[in-house]
Amino acid sequence: MNNHLLEIRGLDYQIGNKKILTNLNLDLSKGKFQIILGANGVGKSTFLKILAGLLSCSTGKVIADKDLLTSYLGHDSQLYLDLTVRQNLEFIRGFFSIPSEVDDLLRRWDLLVQADLTIEKLSQGQAKRLSLAIHFAMPANLFLLDEPSSNLDHLGKDLLMKELFQLKQRKQASVLLITHELSDYFEFADRIYYLGSSGLDLIYDKSDLGFSLSAINQRYLELLKS
Image 1 (cartoon, rainbow, N blue to C red):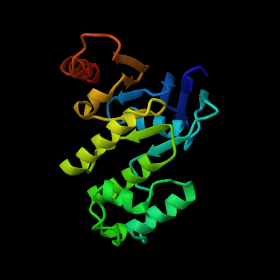
Image 2 (tube, rainbow, N blue to C red):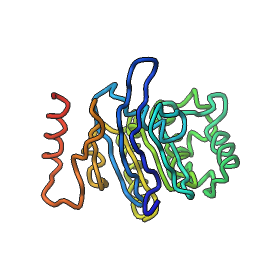
Image 3 (cartoon, one colour):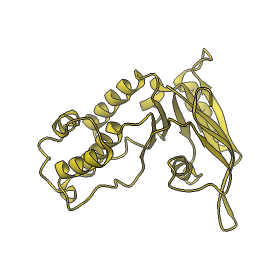
Image 4 (cartoon, rainbow, N blue to C red):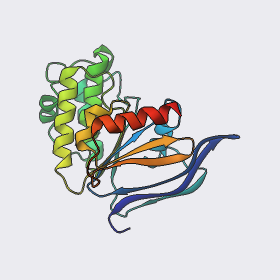
């Protein structure tokens, strides 16, 4: 597969007679940070779930590199509500053979004080930080994130940005991220796509000089209005 972790070719997804995604084509290259923008309800989250293996496409192909290891973070936390923060981390760490120590992860995401609280006693932002801690600790080379900054306060966003910066330094680790907050992630982006009814359109490539954040945001707004 050359330098690609995933190749998506002619992907369609439908429920009954309703087409959700149509003729999507995308290469996820090793070491690249790619962003998908799009209107609410256009199928961005569905697309990410297909890439994570949680849904099957109706037609088309998703071709994976033999060394692909994926970590997926969706809207649902997937945490065990009756377990504590520490117990959640200990269970998942053992199940997935995560090398990081639990206390190191708690410290890294500012959750040491909450370590012995059950998940249902956490704020939404604290629960999101725990989900992010697990997501980034996974022994993966492709990280799929669906609006990762939702529910995060300023501290949580700062911790997320630091983690993404460190991940960006890993030349073989790739990110595909869905967001409505492009300004938060623009500095990391190698490519930005817009998902619309006609498929995926590339609207930014870092190798093309002269594209500013304001220009991309303007293009995004135009596409949303069209």
